[in-house]
Length: 172
Image 1 (cartoon, rainbow, N blue to C red):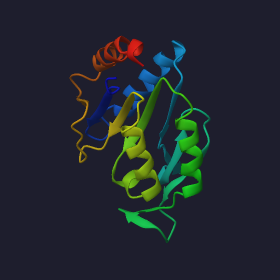
Image 2 (tube, rainbow, N blue to C red):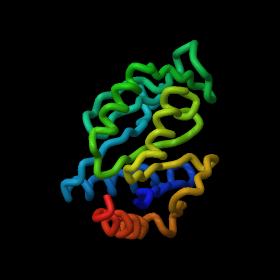
Image 3 (cartoon, rainbow, N blue to C red):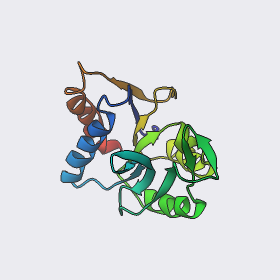
Image 4 (cartoon, rainbow, N blue to C red):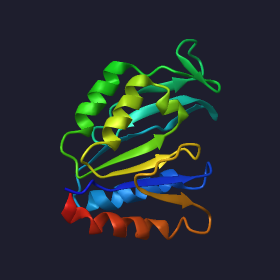
């Protein structure tokens, strides 16, 4: 059996990587794909970024990934990673509940600084499920197709990636 596809989306901050992934999610969801995974939205209070949460694509359950006001945990920039292993275990159960595809936003230094989340990401990337992941530009993978989002191509990448994904649906 062929290894399921891996698609990695990278690019500069603010270029549209997350928007691209959410558009892929929306279209696949409309086609009744079972989608699992996670994303890490920022949390702002009074226009100030306070940290990041981690949310399940399937259930919407969430937990803190990193906070500026924590004083323990691994420090990445001004944030302290506070993700609890128990949440990662729950997330893992959801992610591997027979998805058609797994989506991740993002794989970056903050996410990889949590041992339990890093282990989950490794498990996802070595699984028999197709994966589309937004990847921090400092992280490289060589086992899939890499799309670098730019101002020039960000509007056409949606159709290109969807074409690749849906043509592989029969192999899932």
